[in-house]
Amino acid sequence: MASFIVEGGHKLHGTITPQGAKNEALQVLCAVLLTQETVVIDNLPNILDVNNLIDLLASIGVTVEKLAKGKFAFTAANLDTAYLRSADFLKKCNKLRGSVMLIGPLLARLGEVTYAKPGGDKIGRRRLDTHFQGMVNLGATFTYDHDLLAYRFDGKNLKGAYMLLDEASVTGTANIIMAAVMAKGTTTIYNAACEPYVQQLCRLLNKMGAKISGVGSNLLTIEGVKALHGAQHKLLPDMIEVGSFIGMAAITGSELRIKDAGIRDLGIIPDAFRRLGIRIDEEGDDLVIPAQEHYQIESFLDGSILTIADAPWPGLTPDLLSVLLVVATQAKGTVLIHQKMFESRLFFVDKLIDMGAQIILCDPHRAVVVGHNHERQLKRNNMTSPDIRAGIAMLIAAMSAEGTSRIDHIDQIDRGYEDIESRLNALGAYIRREE
Image (cartoon, rainbow, N blue to C red):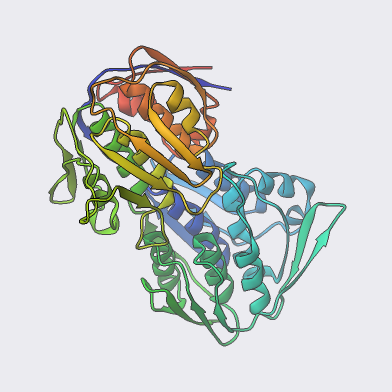
């Protein structure tokens, strides 16, 4: 396992460009299975989760050609159906959370799929009911094979249906969309997730010949077609990286320009940081964070303590609550961080408390942060990254801390952030990777 050795207290300066969006990449990569023709995807980030999914696609029989940095051509003309039933396929699926979105396109393309329970971050229960019920609504059946520890899906005659999702699951919505685009008849999905990355998936599928309307809303209508064709697609900037860079600049008192940030698709992310007192200027499609010695948390209009909570889009993405929590430790004022979706995502705060942060963990979902107003610097610590987002939050804390910290298990960070130490060192950080 690799580790980061982080010397804290260094200011950042310069310009950084966010990578392509990880969560969008995992969706559109699965969509290449829906056609025998070539699909070209640009701005793919060179990160562990994306590379593992590309490797899995190649194992399935997809021809993968690298055209340029971050630009690949995928041709799924001949799928290896024997491999799709192999133990190696199930093992690879089990290691990658995004592999769950193979169910929809493989059902649409082949009419059957065997699938193992996916892996991913240990951030609490992440149920698959929405995915599975969506397939059942379209006419598929599934059974559990106790010998293989895997699910067997049969959906040779998928038919369009009306469905009201029990939760606005992003990956669940994406999975159902990909299963429905070639189903017979019309599918209506109400309470669909409408994140920019789901919108991007719909736009790619429409370019491939699908007929999806209502894109950007929580009511999608999909008219099934007989076949899809090739297309080209470019990923959005990663909104979680953008938020992470805002947090790094704020907590280290640095001036930073985030170039080509995709401001139109950031939703309320910039405003969430502004509520912590962080100044963010917009210049074209760039975000500029000026150096601030202090930033003050707002209160609600009645004077009560500010609450920052996650919610389905267009609410605040849960992936940034860990970053916002760390940034708040050096603000002036108090904030309640409410992580509604995952019951284990706040458990890393004990490491921040060890660093001197004033945090009260009320329960698995809520933490009160009393900011230091930069009057007391966080102390060095040795930590282990439990998931991608806690890992980047720990890195941000270490960058602002006094002394040298160590973060183990950084393959979690590598799953979501491309060459992060080199990119930050170019801005003035002091981060060393130790194998």
